[in-house]
Each structure stands twice: as structure tokens, then as C-alpha cells.
Image 1 (cartoon, rainbow, N blue to C red):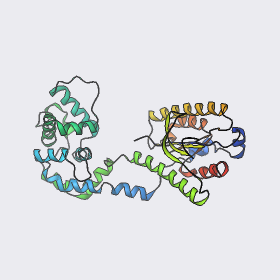
Image 2: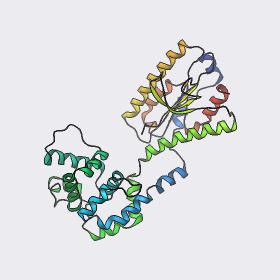
Image 3: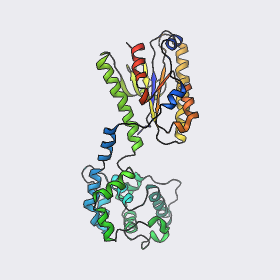
Image 4: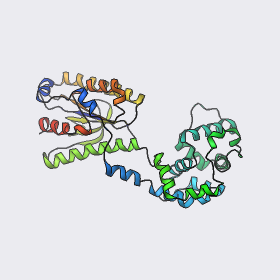
Length: 335
């Protein structure tokens, strides 16, 4: 899925100067200081509850995890709506093997046991798919998961990687049959979908709901399209008001809990887009486009230089604590 992001473009005025005199942009300091976690208890509770079916599946299946045939079946079959990929992620989590370490394990197998010449590791999705179709890999991994050091793979691995491998221990299987024990592990590892990714998608829902409420309360003629490619920018835009053919407003969102180089890339992209829009505005006086950028999350506080670049490449900015900016823009420039 795309990282969450907001880009709003508004253009009804005869000039940018007129637009700017009619509505003031909040200061960078005010915008930066309003960054926050996404606070929505309903969303958080639903996210926590989403792990329940998977937790119950682990509880009901764990007694078979020390049986090679049963474990292989568990890792390669659907259980209702729970796919083998999700089951693999959950399984390695409860036995104490991270996704990154599983990638190293599989790379070792590919190199040492299969004599493969490769330059990149497999993703977890790829590993799950190959486990399903490659019996040799499946057998080696299942033996490793159950027997740890006393397996062909385990002989080649640091003991530290296998320190929590306890599938032959009845007490450990008893733990895996307890809902609270497994639920805590799966939620701590966000198996059902990374929390930050889910928050990013939820932010877009917040904006959609804000637009829908505005339409219901203020302007029944408000129209918008979602996730359409805007040819001028050669890019999919989260929201286009009123639509992709002649947008007045473009909206994109960016939500970051942690910091990373992706934020610099995001800033680079928005700076480039703003330059394209400004060139368009200079040549099309009757269809100017103005950008309103949404950024939120404390991850942006830790990347203030990138945040400043985004601010400088925006006509207006907002976030969850400044959603009123969207109403103000629509009130003044779309009614």
C-alpha cells in the first residue's frame, strides 16, 4: 500500500496573490507544534480486535506444531480468511524468530543447500509462496522450527536465533494455548498489519469523512474523486476536487510515526510537484492550482528540515489538529 500523504490544490481565483490575501497560511512553527499521534480510540480498539481470529487459530493449532506434517499443513493452507502468509508471520513471531531473521535463514538455505547464486533476499510473501510449492525448502524449515540446533539448518545458525525455540516443550505449548499470551505477542509484533500503515489509511478516511460532512452540511454540490492519476503531475492523487478532469483541489496525506529516509524522498517529490504546479499557474491564469499539504505524526518532528521543505512548497498546510483549514479553504474558494 502508498504511504499516507496530503496534497491539496485549489484554483478558482484569478491570481495567487488574491488567494493569499484572502486566507492566511498557518506558520511553520504552529504547524510543527501541532503534530500529534493519531488519536482515535475506536480505530485503536478495532485494530487490537483484528488480531483475535489469528490468536484463536494459534491457540487451537499449537498442539500440532511439533508434528512436522501438521506444521507443514498449517503453514501452507488457508484457514478461513487467514492466508498462509499471515499464518507464517504469526508462527515465527510466537516462536521468537523475527521476519528479518527468517529472511537470513532462507538466504542461508538458498546459498548453502540449494547452491543458488542470487543478489537479493526473498520477501516474507515470497518465502511463504515457495514454502507452499517447494517441498525440500518446506521440510528443511519445518525441521528447523521444531528441532532448532538439532536440524540441518540449525547446525549452521547462531544459538541466539533459536533461543526461544520450544515447540518440544509442553509448558511452551501450554502458553501458546492461552489467548492473552499469544494475543500480546501478535499485537506487539503487529502481525495483522503494521499499525503505522493502518493509521496512514485511516488518515485518508478522516479526510474523506470531513469532505462528506462538509458536503452534507455546507455545499451539496461538492464533488471529489479518490486515487486518480492526474496527468499534469503524472501521479495518482489521493483526493481530487471536483475531479481529475479539472481539479480545483488536490489532497495528499503523509503520516509518520517514526523517522526515515523515505521522508526526504517524500519532500523531494512534493517540491517537484509544487514546481510543476507553479509553472502551470504561470501559464494558465484562469485555472491556477494551489497546494495544501497534510503531514502529521511525531515522525515529522524528528525530520524538521524535510518538513520545512514541504511547508515552503505548499500554499497551505494542515493536519489532524488543524482540519478546520480544509473547511476554511472550501468555504472561501469552492462555494
